[in-house]
Image 1 (cartoon, rainbow, N blue to C red):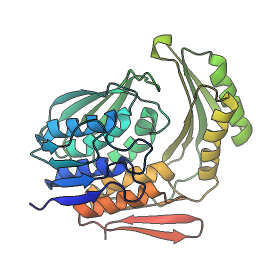
Image 2 (image 1 turned 180 degrees about the vertical axis):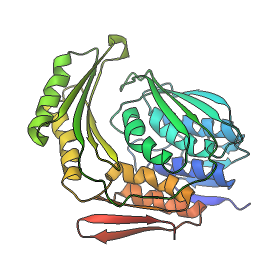
Image 3 (image 1 turned 90 degrees about the vertical axis):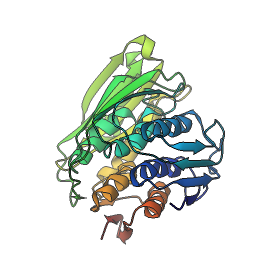
Image 4 (image 1 turned 135 degrees about the horizontal axis):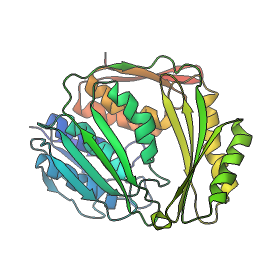
Length: 338
């Protein structure tokens, strides 16, 4: 079978190109070779979380791999048959558990038996969707496509220590269902979730109060974790609609005031709330692959990011599925399939 050639510097030039390629290579059986991995990042090449994704994918499908080492900027991946089973993988840093999960879970939908998957590493860090996002925003929509899947946050892991863990279970999909999100409906609940570990609870309280000053009245949920899960802090703002739940977050950092953390999360939430779009920037990107596997889907988003466009291009290299982006005033219609 012909090897698909990919350029890791295209578009946003990040790890999304590699992750999508790994997922679709496993599913379709098509080998790929990629050069200039993560060329658009300050530290190009494979970091620990990307290497973990490669190694995990190789184990799950018995792939032959060349170039799987830290810092490598090129990789060749020849997949075998996807095998269900019980898998555990450790990133060893605060690298994102969620991004590794999103690489492996689509493939395990095509396995020969049910699977369980546990990833240890970072669950809440600045450069990836938090575990709560997968559980609250992404998972309910994937289930509507016919996927039997559960995701559980076992332990929080913050940057730079990591130490968190996420567990997922998934069964082979019997029949994929296209998903069309035409409207989000009226807002049912606006909630702020303030999380602290090994830090004063007052930090999270200040963040939630600040968010309320930006967004209006909201439900507040304080999550105080054991000190040994920190130090760490994250503010998450959840907008719950009948058709979709969106989650926007900002992680606390040393030297970053609580008010700034709240301002950043509230700004993203407000942009989405005040738009007419059904899904936000990050969920839009992460719906493309399951919709492509289902053979169809559509939604609107208020921002067509470089991640979204690059992901669409990579999907098109592996699957005969068209992805259209149509600008409609202040939003974009994304159509997957015919």
